Length: 405
Image 1: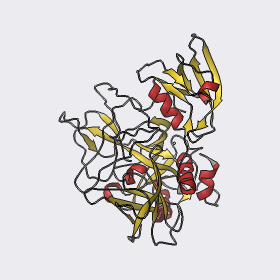
Image 2: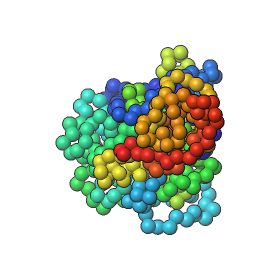
Image 3: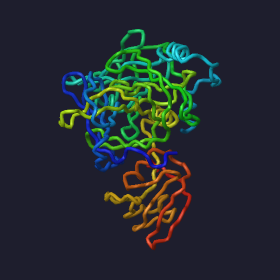
Image 4: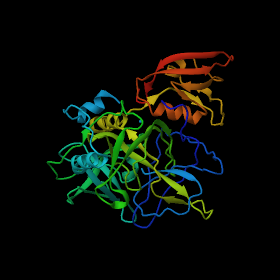
């Protein structure tokens, strides 16, 4: 678990372009998480924004900003899990394992193009079933509506170049996961679902998708960090968070919704965020392009959400039931109230308490606490460290509930 390093305090910047190539982002959610604005040191300002298709060049580098390219349960994995036993390959050279992974995974990755007649955007998708069920990031298809009669147009391009009309089955803006169906297709190759539970820093991985609309792109790298708390903003009202897999495999605009796979070609993450650098002309603009800092939603989390969306049309999220102050406090999350009957009440939280840690994650603000909870799973048992309203230090364990009751 992260020791507190994350990106909940960064200033979000939306990446939108109204040039008939891409625009838009996730819509507001009734459980949207506010993200505070905070500037880093002058040497490195960082931020997140939507990453859809769009060519951009890296200019002179002054500081870092992180932008969106754009939270494991047995039900999520079992619905799509491959029956094959996961085994690591022999000691291949770096080139040969990527070649083998590419041959296995490319047939399971698609390009998604969405257009409302005025604007268009592009991303990637992951085939889950032979009859065309596809998982992608919600921000790739946000705003086009659900069902085959939705007014906006979506087209899937398979790795072999065939195209098919597509529609959104169900979407979860809070988890940034959507399920899409390609119409009138069969015999597709589903991705092999792995697990993100046992990933290790330094483990080799590959990112597969359609950066800048370049179908069938494969890049190699490693897992450079785990449990990186990422709370990006979309440039609109929706805020969400996840504990990300950090990778140095090149991830660029258009990789949104694509696959992060291990050396067996098994899915371990859904690519969702990429890095960028600040413009050199003091215009507050962002120059897109991989600089070795990409982020993916862990598959154990994404697959659970996808399974719930496919089964019920809705997804559940972890819920604590604590209301937090929006004030920035470096020492913790200040509680201003709790919901009756909630896990927060069971833990002994009351107005005036201050939460300083959840599991191993240091909590430096109310936003961080809400984001940390949101990235977990309903039913997870967590350890809360807090100072109660009388000033007494307490450590308690509590089971998170579900926002769906």
